[in-house]
Image (tube, rainbow, N blue to C red; front, top):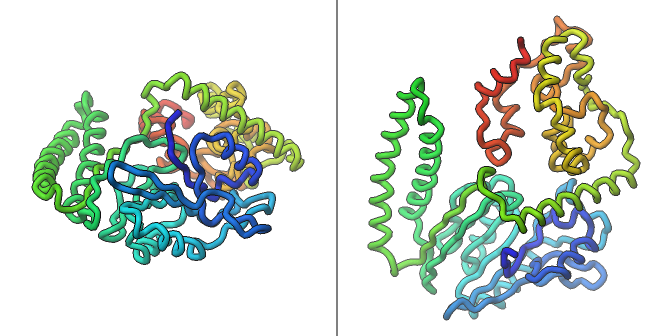
Length: 407
């Protein structure tokens, strides 16, 4: 539906096994790219290493490289080998460099490896990287010939990167980089102004941000003027990526696909966990559950039970997502985000966002209340789940006051 030409295969795409991924590949209307996922029996790539496209008078190539998988994404069936990129990229670049004016690399390799590639292969002009830390980050100039962009996980950023490429000319650095950073800062300040409008108690802060924004607008105008004067002498780009806001309307057909995908993931996780023999009633280490807290903190627990935190797990059950491992760490208590599968056997008292989600494990406090006091609620704990993508109206001070578990 989106109209991709190609998708780079990442290490995590192999988490459900090769057969599962190949089935998806065969149903796709675009190419899946990886030069270094190898069939150990034949020694040949299991996916296309690259594709080429004619863009007007310019011949472009897109290469795929897969990074090494972590523990959560280790191929389970042993049918593939992810070889080092150094074993494959040099020969591909040698084949493509002379006949292609623009080369794109799709990868989930680390930034260090991307820098190494940019230094070694000037023919690579654009690296599109999949990684958790790339969300909303401006393009990174690795060399005069290579820029790195990334939009974060799960397609939650949307936009366009427009390239004006002049064969033989490198990227415009310096002023363009400052302009990109300035536009990003302008968006951030505008967001702050929108949140502060209509709040007279924060008038001074509002005016301070308005002053900073006015100064920044002058700087952006000057940089844009310099860009226009230099147009046509070097290669350039315009990067406009924005976060998908939960307030934006969903496209009905896309929403149906997303919901169907979530249900499929939940069913697969349930089958996988059943086959692994997940046990019921296993308490998370150091956590006691809300009923243990209620023995001493009766009023606080009464207040909590009337809150949305208390029904957080039920919302997953109602949507058929109680086996979705991406959702569970934020809807249960005591789940390790790095190993969410442990949530499937957790005790009933932890099947909610309970007291210990905010105050930390309570078993030591329960055994010795005076000697081991629970931790106060910190903003950082809340922001682990109340991200802008999931809750764009979250306000720590106001929401904590609304919860009133301390009364």
